[in-house]
Every structure is written in C-alpha cells, then in structure tokens.
Length: 147
Image (cartoon, rainbow, N blue to C red; front, top):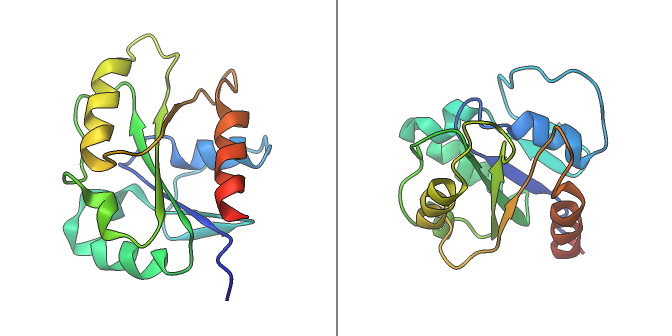
C-alpha cells in the first residue's frame, strides 16, 4: 500500500484546520476539529491529541496511514505542548510549520526555537493563511514527499 497522506499535529488553536483549508485551496469556514478529520490527502487531528499524552497512541496509530508529518507551531504562543524530539517517534518525514507568521503578536524566533525542539533537523516553513504567504511552497514540498 502506497501512503499518500500528510498528518497535521499541533495544539488547540494552532491553525491546523485553517492550514488544511489553505493547502487544499478551500475557502469554506473553518470549524473546530473534534475528531480525526480526513479530507483529500490530509489528516487533520484535534489539538487535544497533541496536548494530552493519553492520546499519543491515537496519533501513532493514525500515522501509519500517512507519509509526512506536519508539526504546527502557532507564532503567537510562547509554549509547545509536544515533548522534545516527539517527531522522531513517527515513521514519517517530519516538517515543521509556523502559522500566523504575520500576526501582530507573532514571535518567529521563539516559534522556530520551540518547533526545532520537536522536529530537530527538519525543514521549517512559515505560513500565513490570511495572505497565503508560504502556502504554495509548503504544499509543493509536501506533495513532493508524497510522490
């Protein structure tokens, strides 16, 4: 079986569902993800799965359906809910994504530092779902990994 999906993980409100819509060129309203949401080539996970270690098994099991892992860091947050090196526990290609890069409260340097703890030695993209800055580049990189 050839895996052709990307799984998004990150804390509640980090922008996973908004990023999903942007990557798929959809303009419909974003709603809170309450359970695993499969749409086209993306698996959107609830933020609670990243914030509560009790759900890590669900993330690990779901990752078996994917080839790429996008770890999301909100540029306006000063913390990361995932433990250091968390991405290395997945049999996937990890990519870091900093969302809300153009927000007035964004701290790109801190977001990068926090994200590098979770996805060491991985490529990190900065994106804005408002202006679409960085979205095309991220989409291209992900689709290239998916083959």
